[in-house]
Length: 321
Image (tube, rainbow, N blue to C red; front, side, top):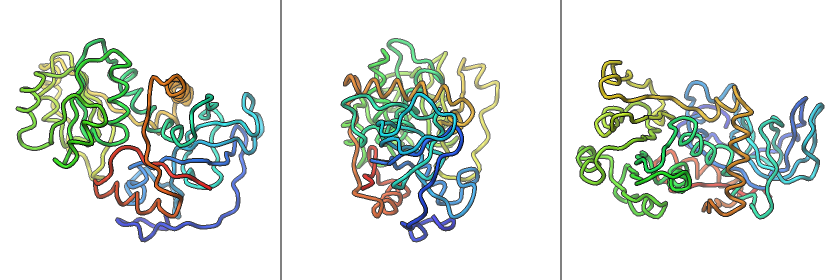
């Protein structure tokens, strides 16, 4: 990505020198790389996503270890792995912090594993570490037809949760949300609060990637003791103020923020633990994740635009020949 831009016109595929791992790093021959909305936010120039330009996108990969940097043990050249990258994952060769790389269990393809570091780990940690889902609790998630939404829908019953309510921005996405596993799929319109209450009453866990634009709705449908997790800002602008403390206290509601990339940088051991767990869930078929392959690096820019336009469904990965 050569400079901030709203469209795909400044995204190019270039030949560049192979990156080499530094101390504590590994390089990976990438088999598949995951595409994420965070790449779109970087492309737009949203603060905090692209440290410099040109920016090389791609934050999750799966492939085989190419080279070990100094001080790395526990991994071997040629070993199948999946891992987080700090940019540069959409490439034939990517470099990753060795602490954020996990061996790929037998039977897990690189196409599916490429969705594990950022997407599946986000879904898992939102439900476990952040909101601490309890048996039988009802879960509501906005943007339920996307990649994280599909992963959350699968994980809720695995973790013992109850009814799953997913919201989508367009009526045309209701079928996508239902196919992803949501028990109740609703359109985010002016009738949403009434629709949620009619369908399930109040909910215990709310996963909200929409910044603060839906926070009033979240509080209206929250049960006493509910936990709300905010983990995105897709509009890229300045979020609206958080609700007054008295409203949280009066409703007995907890509000938390979450960033998977931030956690990977600040607490890599926690991110790596989540990665190993989701890979094991894929290996034993507890999770059966469907991904859409977009067909190579030359298709990445168009797929990013699909996500930017809100027309995507599920999780996209690209093969890297």
